[in-house]
Each structure stands twice: as C-alpha cells, then as structure tokens.
Length: 331
Length: 151
Image (cartoon, rainbow over all chains, first blue to last red; front, side):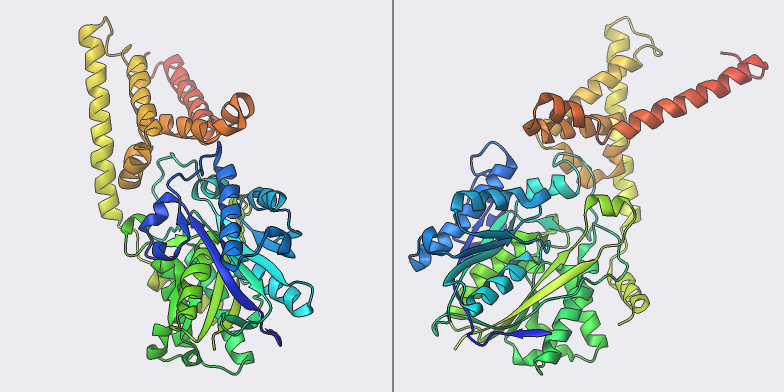
C-alpha cells in the first residue's frame, strides 16, 4: 500500500558530510563538507563514522537555525554491527532516537518514519538519514582494507558519507513529501555479495511498479526517478526489467542511479558506489538543492538495500533486498 | 518478471570476467614475485653459507617481510587488484593476509585484536598446509618403506 501524506511534510534542509575520497564524486560540490581525514581525526574508523553523523546533523540544523533541543526525533542507521556509530551519535546529540536498519535503504525508511511522526503531529522537527564509512563497513562485510583481494567488475565501492535531512511541517517553499511506498523484502536468488546491483534491482523494480500503480502514475509523470545504489550494472538490470514490462525506451532516461553516477566513469570504483551513505548523500544534497532551484518538480527517490550479513552469505543463503520510495514535490 | 527470466537477464547484462587478461596478469606478476624470490635465494647461497636446500627458510622470511612492508604502505592491495591470484598465491600473499588483519584489528588491542585475528584469513592456509604436508609425508614414507623410492 502506498502511504499518502495529507499534510505533506517538508524536507527543510539536508546536511551531507563526506570523506576525502568523495572529493572525486561528481556530487561533491553539493556536499556541505568534504573532510580530508577519513577518521575525522579520531582514533578509530568507527569513531570517525560517529563524528561524521553528528556533523551531518549539525549542518542540517544550522541551515534552518534550529538547535538540537528543538528536534523531536532522530531516525537513522548505518551498517556497522548493532549500529554503534549512529547509536553513539544519538548519545551526543541528545535527541529521542530510534535506530533503523534497512541496510542502504535506511536513508528513505528513516524519512518515511519521520514523515509519519510529523503527520501524526508528534514532531515539529525530526532528523532522518543514514551513513556509511568505507573502512568500517568493509571490515564488517568483506576483507581487511589492506588485503590484496581482486574485486570483480561487478563490485561496488562503499562510500564514506553521512546524509541527514531535517523534516518539518509543510512549507510551500520547500520540497515536500506527498507519498511513500515501503518495499517488501525481495529475493530473486542472487547470492554474490560482489554483485549487489543484481540482487537489489528486482526490489527497486517492485517498489517502483507498486508505487506507480497505486498512484495511477506513469514514469513520465516524474522529472526524475533516482535509485540509491544499484550501480551501473544494477541500473541496467532495472531498466531491462522495466522494458520487459512495457516501459518505453524514451522514459528510461528519467531513471538514474546515485551509485552509478557517484564516482563518474572512474573504473577504479568498478560498478559504482554503494553504502547507506551513498543514497543519503545524494538525496539530501543534490536532489534537495535541485528541487529548491526549480530543476525538478516531482521526484521519486528509491533507496535500495541488500539485507545480507557475512554470516548469511557464508551459510550459503541468497541475498534478500528491499527498496523504499518517497515521492517529493515542489510547487 | 519470473526469477528464471531475471536470472537470464542478469546473465546477459553481467560482463564475463576477462579470464585471459586475468590469467596473463597473474602469470607475469606471480612470475615476477617468484623471480625476486629466486634472486633472494641466490643471494643467501652466494654470500652466506646456505645450500639450495637450506636457503628456503630465509628466502621465505625475506619475501614475506617485503610483502609486509608493501601491505603497511597500502601498496599490496593495489598490486592485488591488478594481479589477482598472481600476488595472492605466492607466499607474499600469505604475509599480506596476516599483516592486513593485524593492522585492521589493532584498534581492539594487542591480545584480543591483533592476536585473536592475526590468522583470520591465513588460518585456513596454515591448517590445510599442515594437513596436506602430513599426508604427502605419509605417502612418501610408505613408498620409501616398500622400496619404491628412496629419501
């Protein structure tokens, strides 16, 4: 079922902080800060991860001139075990908090919850977002950073970035959230953790199809449908599925993927970017700014997440994935 | 779209790994590493009193030391991305697996972090190496005992 927001909560501001390598991102000009130390001058990667989340939240608050005492709820998550970076950032931010895990789709699932709280009248302001720190996540899911394993062309690069959005009651001059679709956990039998795009594409496909059907829309009703981190191959697969389903080729140009574009055409990043911070960084900087500038009037943001763990992979399980979508409009 | 149909689409879209290119790169980088090993071995034989049979141990120690330095400088992973099995299979790959795990887990302390995780990746190499060495030695022992070959 699609969620229709009667009060249309607004995306008042976004705060995006990224690591040094993200200077090479085509989106880096839209970020609030690109730090030159991937650990934010902390002792461990995980502490740097926490610091990055705090800074992203602070940027988002500063833009609207609100203090952390004005924020009613913090919704967010990351990919580290038990989400300690986000939990610890919440400790320092002192905002009522629920940690959310939808893997890399957390950037949107957190916004959906924040909008529901706003719609309910329970929140004037909330912060919602997600983050990932390359080194902390790689050790979690794959090998030590300095281990010389060869990554295949299908692999994606976990970005170091945190993106948080400040959600508040409807204001006409800001992008507003009209509707949302919470995705199912979809498994098409893909089992290669170095080919996440292929695992996630069906989830994105189902969520987009379901959202469009329930809203009686076609792809061309949107100025942009932007998925989170399918990467170049995942985006190709999503387009392939849509074409099979009768979508015309000219409509496909409205479909883009943050992960596929994140590092440009740099082959060092294989199929593109991924990680919870990838969609969050692009959605809450580039997209908000473009909408406020009037470039886009109606946008569908579809964050995709692979719901695996290293354990589930080693036990031979396939990779279920999810995709959550929000429909954002600008007057 | 059905699962089978999607798997077909996935097969069509996913580029095939460039096997020939990968094999060639692995062959030349692996061969280069072995040539360095040979040079080190000759160095020990010519300048110190090692024989071909006894030069093995110091040679292995030396090339593993080289790979540890390269790992610490963050260069070995770059070689690995280029060479694949060419830098993973020689003993230098073993050194890389050990040191990369040590660096990674330094933040959890020397005992539980470094000590507990040092052989996280290389542990199975040690285990299966020792087990297969045992069986090879056993087979040779049997062959020597029944007089097929001599030591």
